[in-house]
Length: 161
Image (cartoon, rainbow, N blue to C red; front, top):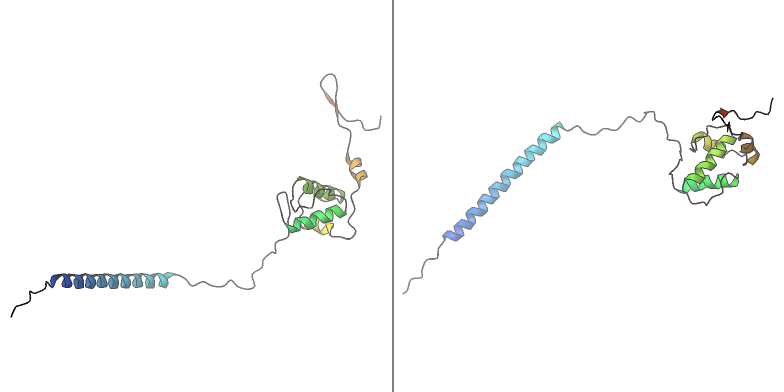
């Protein structure tokens, strides 16, 4: 009878040893992470809801140079209906819309800053808002001062001697 040669068992043992070491490493790492998480959770405050009775101010609509959107189209439509705006209804608050808002504000005695804020929008939405009146703006224009031959600026004529 012949004897079978013994197979080397060391590669099998090495693989088992490596797997055992990897398992130990991952077990230790998992426990460390769990302890770190538990410690962090203990010091992190729980989120709370704000008291429901906090006073707050609701933001008022405000449209100014650079604003865009359907609200600006509605503003342009109202200004167009009153004769202040003659441009395209494009929803872009640029020079034309700003000038129309300023003219509306001037004619209604408002602060003519070209910004459609709460007060301006309230006036625009009144049924008795005044339509554009070119005579109002002609009356605002005054003669400009003139320069005399000596280089001095003389006041504009007032119409009284």
